Length: 159
Image (cartoon, rainbow, N blue to C red; front, top):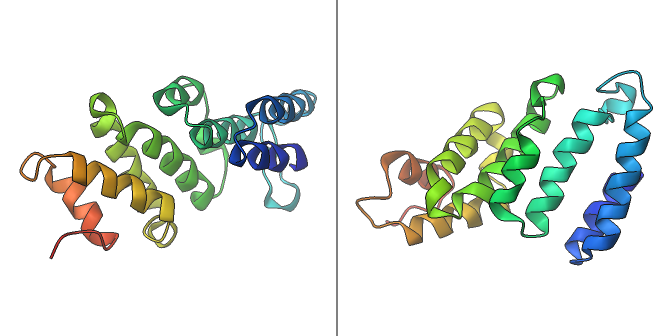
């Protein structure tokens, strides 16, 4: 978990090489475990969680829609925490909602995250920013009822 945290810290500083090094170290350790998802300390360390962190770090590094390729094989349902699952769907949704071609898919993921843990998602600054940007870039009529509804629940809807 320390390698994963270090990878995120490096990504926050736009240091892709250091982030990748730490991600690869974490993946090597996870590959040596018998279980796909560990149970110690509710950290859920294992191959699945390393994949989830790869998505989060990819979003942080600005990889956009490329994180969908990483996320494709992740069995997020193996993590027994609804809030951790919600964070995964929120990160992936944020990456996809910014592109017009994948906006609907991104919105669906954000709505899925909100359903799992509304208290986290509705108060997440990064989700609010992504939804606000999508709302501004969509035409008022074409923004869609679901996007406007989520924006309203996030406190972003125009009065």
